[in-house]
Image (tube, rainbow, N blue to C red; front, side, top):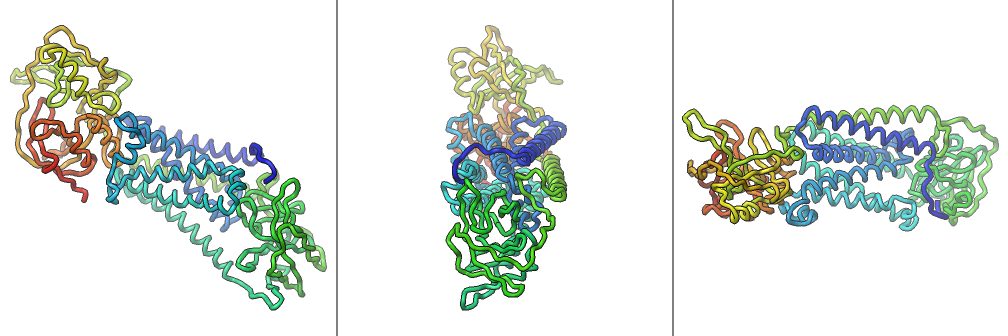
Length: 611
């Protein structure tokens, strides 16, 4: 407890606790990954893992927050509290996987540091709807990190139980930040009432058990007896105290535990020195008071922990008049021995259920209760995982086959966007049919620089270019990634046989849609749209990937238009603030092969619709 710090020894119950915890986690991930694989085979594994670890972290956090109040309402839950520290550290590691994967997946590979992208990518700090939810999650993660790193008893002793407890109460701030992180993030994208209701139900459950437990504690503390002129306060009748248990009383606004053991009565300060556990809810076993939270021991006569430990509690004087017990309000110095009150007759100790973590022979009724409760929690967690999975809406029919590179030969162009034009045959009128694949560099960078450097050395209007890259496909709309950068492009010494591409003006119009980065949206990420993807899309477009407008035509079909300035210039920097938001854009619409190109003035003709 206090003399030295050595590696924590796992007793039999702790080993069972942790084994059951990790087996349950393995079962959860098996179900979650298999279900996502069956329902959404197009999902990239990283996305599944990010969502799976995030959902599990939220489930575990709800369990952790509810264990304490549940134990105050029903002591049979105490076995779940005994090793809650391991549950909390496990939750932190699971949160870490979610956080690290998210930071790497959405914020690395661009032209700024991932942490800069995290905080500066989405700058709508003045908007609730578009508030950068990922910063809320990061703040919560820092709190959980501090709590995990200070979970060892060294920090408990170094900081003092009061400060340590106050520090760990920040879990409620972290919980609030996580709730907002989810509400302003994935729920805004998926907009499923089922997912929303699951989150709100969890929040309501946490609030309910805390309110009920808090009301119970408040009701007890409000029942005070006034001391007489000699500072004696009535506690209860001797018969009201169960053998080897305690009755708590409020003395000078502090709780005191009065224990009856055999034919004796002793009183000590109610708060355990370890983590402020309620000793009055414990039991005397083998002559020592056992804290119900973690099994710490104190001698009832002097409040001292058994040697070699050094913790001490304040003790109190008692007296019995008739069958009534009274306590003196003046606390004795910690560790002061006070002669116990000897009752007139010795009472045999009846067997009563009480959980002690380090005891191998705990009551079967308690273990059975906890086992059933845990099975119910696991079943509920799997139901939540299944409910979340089946209610995902924004999973596109897309793919990014980066493992199986394809070779495409044709005409390499730089304007109106870097692309490879290929001859696919002739139409019914005998005209050449050409399919154009926009080219995107690896990571989160555009291909303009690579294509420009090659076109300065070769006449790619005539010579055939060979592209070895990965197809990015969404609903048969295809772009290509230059997976190996400049090494993905080879110029062949033969004519490509293709005419020069032409921009064909369609109309001046106004279009409602969403500005996207084509690499992620078309399939490199899935989902690659909406608010959760905003920071990543900003990183891609600021790295040179051509911005596109995703919109619906009059038939409700998805269409895409590359965005350029009124004079054909790149406008990446100017549209950054509108990315992944509903927008209205006015301009001139052109057709280039199988793509639309939209000329507009971002300063005058692009309007955000979220306000």
